[in-house]
Length: 143
Image (spheres, rainbow, N blue to C red):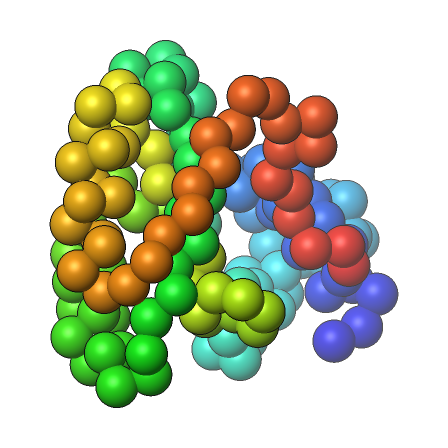
């Protein structure tokens, strides 16, 4: 990856819908050359996809929380399909420390969050943190 690739990535991180023509102008290449670079970055897995940045509050999801889960490694084959099928799970990470998993979720209400935690407890002990505010919102990897 060279500086042109890095600049393309930075431009796409600020707006994934930036037209190829604009990107080409910004990096002083032709549109076909930019398209070829983007395709190469996609094939290499550097660019995994293009997404929307939605505001959960505007969609009625007022509760953002992180749930720590302490579970045994033998439970992973049952846990992974369970957690992948939960639409309110935004992210799930296998982590080090006192807990095995860190699960990021959003729900319309604390009652629905409580119901989900009850289901999650079949796999082990949980500890939940509800987010009050996010002074640093999710951001892109620096390139």
